[in-house]
Length: 542
Image (tube, rainbow, N blue to C red; front, side):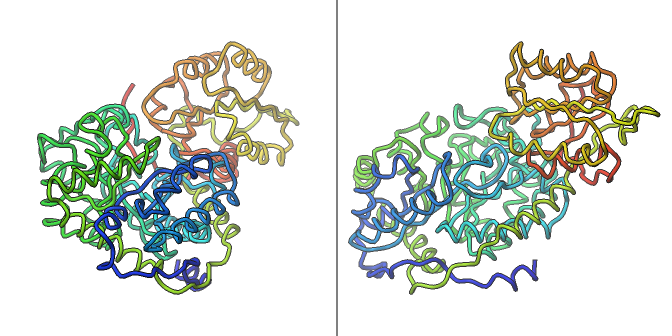
């Protein structure tokens, strides 16, 4: 990490200097600094009036199938609009860049980021910090300042429908050390980390996008398990903390954390001593809108201790601003807005947004990919090997054995699958492969069976995002396991799906799908190398 820091010396991206001091801002302009709207290439024009009138202080760029050049063009355009505002204060540009279920290899043009669970399985803190540092340099080159990452939720609930591989695992100590590594890496690159979802979303059985989850842990359990990584991040000086739209009866029986003074003010700010930015999760989620309109939720969040408000998608920003402003005045909450806006203004100053133009970092793609390859090689885990199928040795006299690899994965990962064949081809194997649909139909099962027929070795990969089992995929894989003798099963995303395949005698886990983990898996199967990864979670008994 120290070597990397010595190589990449840089300053911040170009911005026009702001023309005002904080004291010169009007109440409306201060309120605007606290509000963050969601944007993508297609919706940008809808935000232009709000940005040019100073009613928005930041944006969260949404994932979409567009290139890095388009992302950079979008950011530059947004900042030009901000320069036209009366105060000329640049926008905070933020992103959800955390790997796994939130990111895929074709969105925004940024490099594939390993899942947190993959990083934890590799158990390489320096490598994780290097990954974050090098990825952070590319974010800064594009004009991004804030990354809503890492996730510090301790995923100790196998039935969690939303966190899964976004978490480092079920051990608070592992979550803490790996989370700190990423925070430090992004910080070294000049990117603010906003850790989430405070005070912990790992023990939920509902998705807060669609319902109000409840964590029934006692105050003691909360302190020992879920709060521990956040407490360490606060001591490390993390820039921001994102609130969870989750109910914690042991901490506040009435309000989700986002609207909870006992959690945000009394616990986070007073008892834990947090001085950074408190950021809400998106207020358009069902777990928030159950209680209020977007504007009403913004007011409740500010009133109870939040500083930066993520308004969500598909909103009318000027309408929401007007409603929020009126309600704040009615409740006499101007001092709270003043406090929140000042923190954001100072954060922009500290990030260099209000200073003179400076140089950008140098490209870091090649160094990043080298680190990703190292991490991926360390992460692949041999979960079980009942019949000692690994390393696989073909039958004597079989000069050119055949392997069939059936990948159950979305088409967008197809370019990642090809590297799996390389180690087999180098050893003179015949290689067959088939990319079946994530939710396979009859034709997929027929083609998979045709691929497997006569093969000396069958490789089957599953992909399950979190807790929800894909029944078609499960049935297809179990059917193939039953019909074929020499089979290796690879869980390529959530390791919790391994419970669905009790008859699989040989199981590998990769915690994510990229070309490097797949090539490593092939090398492990052939005996070219030993599996180094460790399971970051406990698998439930079937």
